[in-house]
Every structure is written in C-alpha cells, then in structure tokens.
Length: 140
Image (cartoon, rainbow, N blue to C red; front, side):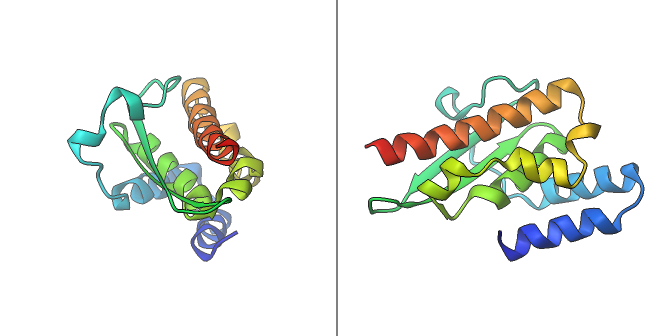
C-alpha cells in the first residue's frame, strides 16, 4: 500500500456517518485533475459504467514496468471512486497491479456495501480494465 491510500482508509475509519463518507469521496473526486478533452475518447472509455468514465495508461520501460494511470468521470461520486482506484494502482509495477484487487480495499472501508448496483458495476469495470491493461503489458 502507499501513504495516500493509508490516509484514505484512515479517513474512512474516522468518518462515522455515510453522508460524510460520500462527501469525502466527492472531495477526492474534486481534487482529481481533469483529463483533457482529446483523451476523453472511446478507446479510453470504461464500458459497464452508467456514468462516463475514462482511464488512460502510460507504461514505463522494462519487463515489469511501472504503469501510471489517469482518469476522469462526469459524475461527482464516480469521479471520487476513480480517484481511489487510481490511488491503489497508479505508479505500481504491472505484476503488482495484475494481482491486486482494489475491490477488497473498497470492502475494507465499507464502501462496496453502500454503492448502488450501477456504481458497483462501474467500479468493477474500472478495476477489470486496469488489471487487464497490466496483464497485457506483462504478456508483451
């Protein structure tokens, strides 16, 4: 794990009320840098999300490269979920990404149980797309 993710987990533990937790997720989304419009293309879109979600990856050199991810969404809460997912995966080696299931982290903080079915499907689609990107990177 990393310090930023540890901080998010600690913050969720500290917040008792789910309205406060949702506000926190929205604040995380507001802090996420916008993707430029030229990257909000079909190739970068995450299918399976009710909202529009885009993920962009950039891999570094090597047999097990570090992969950097950027993302965006047109919905406030989903944008916050994107931020948490990126905190889990971006800047990690491809092998680590391929074997890490961010959904476990969302379960630990209790967020999975409080997402609508559509948002949970979108979250799963984001995680799947990122892990598949890492697996393809390792296979090439």
